[in-house]
Length: 113
Length: 114
Image (tube, rainbow over all chains, first blue to last red):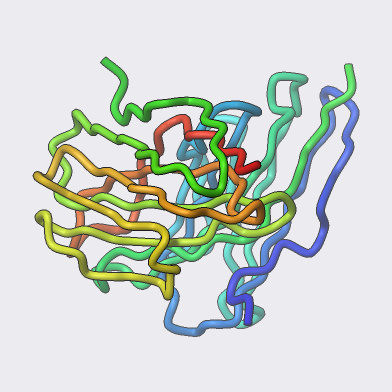
């Protein structure tokens, strides 16, 4: 049973527009959420995170929104740039509980010039 | 030096071979992990070590044997693998218990089993 779901396998966006990447989770114990970005032939790198006590966290062009009642989070990238083309993984954890992350399958974002 | 270093980056082996993957972290972290990434699947946690002690084995077949001699080094010994074990194997480290779970990944070892 997948506890973190990224139902759309891919997304294509025009440069300069907004990219919205969605993630749903089923485990109500999750209280910390992270997004990772992965380029081909590289390991995933941390992008942005949000604690369950917040509903929004912003870092430059990247904003993560959390809707706890819907068990849904989204990553907004604006404006999108061609260098943002990568696979984006959503992950969740129960903070302090051995810090184990549960990952989604990932979404491949393509930003067209 | 990069935070988490994995060697080799690419490995091709036959089903009867024995090989090892190596991971080293220079971040002073207390926890180290092995993940498996297969095509179109989520990252799958295999093993977790905290302070050199294995704290999680996610029902991994015994043909994968981890070793953690100290908090900075992690190995994955491979023996009589199957073609379906071909995947990207990622090592990661984190602060460990009490942390938020943020992982720092290596670049991965791409394994092909013939």
